[in-house]
Structure formats: C-alpha cells, structure tokens
Length: 489
Image (tube, rainbow, N blue to C red; front, side, top):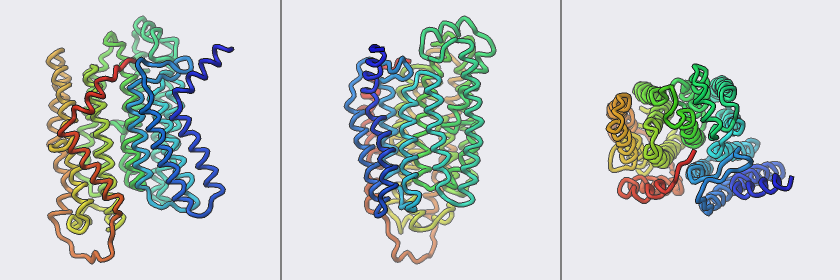
C-alpha cells in the first residue's frame, strides 16, 4: 500500500499543469455562481492567467528520460510536453480573442475550453487505451457543447451533427480497442507484451482492430472519411471557437495517431502495410479537402475543408515512420497553430466590424481594415506553403522526409503521396487567395465611418505574422529544440 501511495504521489508531481487546469475549472465554476458584475472580464482574466502559469510549469519540467505515471497509464516525456505547450498556447489565444458572452453563458464557455485543453494534455500522455478513451471523451463532449454557442438553429444543427458523427467514431474506436485487447491481452499499447502478442497473432482481426481504432483518432483531426462534420460545424460556430477546434483537438489527435501508428506497425515488423493505409488516408484528405474548398463561398467552410487538407499534410510526416518525419511533423504542428490563429483572428475582426459572412462581401475591406487584411494574407500564404513564410518551410521539411524515405526504401507509395502533395499545393493557391482577391482587387462602395478594429487584436496578428516570417528565416532554433526530443513509444 505504501508503495502504491508513493507512486501516486510521485506521479502527481508530473501532473501539476493538468492539476492547475482542473483547479481552474472549479474556480471558474464558483466565480460564475457568485459573481454578477463584470463576470466575463474576470473569468477571462482567470483563464489567461491559468494558461500562462501552466505554460511556465510545463516549460520548467526537465525530463531526461520518459517517466511512467500511475502504472504507465500516462507517460511524461519531451514529446508530450511539446504538444502541451501548443495546446496551452491555443487555449490562451482563444480566450484572448473571445468576445463578450451572454452573462448566463460566460461561465460554461470558459469551463468547456479549459476542459478541452485538459483532455488534450492528458491524451498526449496516455499510454493505456482506457486513458485514451477518457481523454478523448473529455475533449469530445466539451467540444460538442462549445459548437452550439452560436445559440441559433444553424449552430444547434451543426452541434448535433458533430455529436452524431463523434458518437459513431467513438463506438468504432472502442470496438477496435477491444479487438486489439483480445489479441494482445493488454491495454498498454506501448508495452512489450502488446508488441510480442500481436507479432504472434497476425490475423485479419489485427487489421480490423487497428483501422477501427484509428477511426476515432481520425475523427478528431477531421481526416477523410471522418471529415463530414467539419464544414457545418465551422460555419455555425463562433469564429474564436472555430480557431480553437482547428488547432487544439486536431493536434491532440495528431499526437495520439503518431504514438498509435508506431505501436500498431510493430516497429516495422507488422504483417500489414500500415504505411500504405496512412498514406492513402493522407492523400485522400489532401485531395478531398482542396477540391472541396475550391467551390466554397463561405470563408469558414473554405477553411474547414482547408483544415481537412492540412490534416493530410501533417499525416504525410508520419507516413515515412521515421524519427525525422515525426520531428518535421512537430515543426509543422507549431507553424499550423500560428498560421491558423492568424487567419481566424483576422477573419473574426473583419466579420465582427464589417458583417461579412460570404467571400464576395469582403470586397474592398483591404483598404478599410488594412492590418487585418494584410495579416490574413500572410496567414493564407503560409497555409498555401509559399515563401517567405514558415508554411513553406514546414511543407518543404515534410516533402524532404518523404523523398528521403523513398530514396532509402524505394517505396512507390512515398513517391505517390509526394507527387499528390506537390500538385495540391498548386491547387490550394486558387482558393486560399480568393479572399485576398476580393479584399484588395474588388471594390465595394460602403460607408465605413465608425468602424473600428481592436488595437490588441491588431497587435496580436502582427506578432503572429512576424513569427511566421521569423520561422521562415530561422527555423533552426525551433528545429534544434525538436531534434533534442528523443521520441520513445
């Protein structure tokens, strides 16, 4: 008993950021119940402080070797800490740009965001299928409710679709995990027992179980064929929450996919071609996302399909099943956070001030809202993958990992997804630059007297744009940090 209590105590020391976030949920609840004046401002300040403090706690954690927590239910390592920093940054930026909520909804709004961030931090640490399910459900249930914060018919419909698709994906995932458990005899997918027993039980059930388990993870990153919820949810949900959905749950799903695919591939010893499976999913996500985005007239629906395609690009880094590819994917994840928040913050500014909800309605806004329009242009160029932004560097690194993998293994599937990625980078030009075309080329006469943009949000978009330029010119700083991460399953 003493040993167990000691293990729990030592494990809790590595969960200080998560404990802080959990405490913040309770504090936010009590403040929301008993404070009536300036509730939104107070709750927003508490959330910003908590995310900043949690970031400091994560940054101060020095992990030389992976640390097993609670009997290897969770694991603290550099890989998980890297993604935690991205999740907490995403939560901070979301709260920063969040507009005034109705007093009766303000408390729930901040609690749900905190819950999603907490679930994401736990998911990236999860080494046991039970913890994976619990973490994903914490993310999912909170996300379903957040998607309904538009409080109208369209928002309710999008939230319901999100819930229904998510329920089916979760059911598939749990059934797949049960099949893997029946074959391996363990819920710890990182253990030697899992590897040994699956090597001895290479049956079609292993393939079915792996694919069904992947279904739940692919839903979180809105990859094909689990992307159908994204356009309706993105269109109907308030823009700050859309920015949050496009980054935090997606990167959490990407992190768990990275761990799981390495495990199910049995370190290259699997009898099934998991490289082919992931490559096909990535290629289809890129193709479907980009081709669907071409026909969109609503900017948030366009960015929803863009998000599907970006999921495909991030999966390309995993396809090679190499440490280098994973490191490049982690670089892409950081850049993805910057360019997505940049675009959505600028979009939110113009939508709120101008009342534009369709792309043609953005005509002439480039001259009226110069800073948001220019910074949005920078973000869209980065999403396309063009210089001089870090989006170019991120895609270049992903393509280089594919080419290196092809030269080393001679695998035609790597060459195929390499070509698909390059061609779709060209295709994406036609829809990413659609909004800037209307902003700067098209003219629209309208009285703009009295329209104002927040100085703080202008400053934030400028800083994000500078970060994208800086990472293009000096990617070595971030890559040195990433390369020190010794990824161990």
